[in-house]
Image 1 (tube, rainbow, N blue to C red):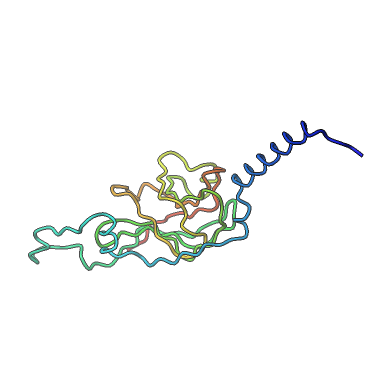
Image 2 (cartoon, rainbow, N blue to C red):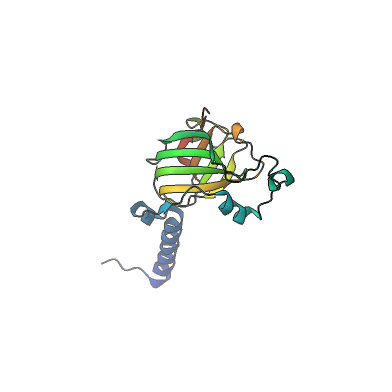
Length: 188
């Protein structure tokens, strides 16, 4: 029978426990068995005003003498279907200008995997090229809200959406794309 002295066993067990803890934190394997569904409606101008401050009218709009952005329908700017990269990903990505002038990236019928530190980006690269990296000038829109459903991501004010070629679901921890969608301008 092999006997290990306590002087050796305790440090070895501590190192193994530390390695297991780091592995669990890094890979979060339980996420392979979980789903988070998010079903958000396309925001209205009133909802974005709550997040961006009070809505203001120009004088002409207040007096009825000129155009106003109130009560206008959202305008689709670009759209595309997700393609799979590191994890099975499907659904639609759309960029939309809302009545108040704000812009959102919207995912519809999204299906992808959960993962550690998954984020949403706009990239200047096309969907195929982001497998090699996000590229210069990518804009982070936040953490992925859920791996299933319909969700909205506010695009920072002043962002010129015509400069971006794809929407990307990116695992920041491992620097890999779960999937991406080319954003083709909508004819209108």
